[in-house]
Length: 75
Image (cartoon, rainbow, N blue to C red; front, side, top):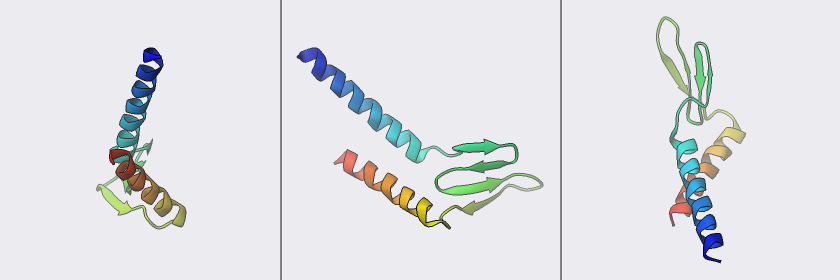
């Protein structure tokens, strides 16, 4: 029984770490001169240019759910 409880605790800590990393980390998608993440889209070329990536409704809902999941997991 103790081993099962330890496994559940390790699984929960792993999920929390992955949640924080996936919310905070930048550059989920990198393709040559283009990098995109949950918060901004960046292009490189002659100059480094970033735009906010909150133009789509589905992306705004993903951003909101990620923030809510971080808040509720901390509580």
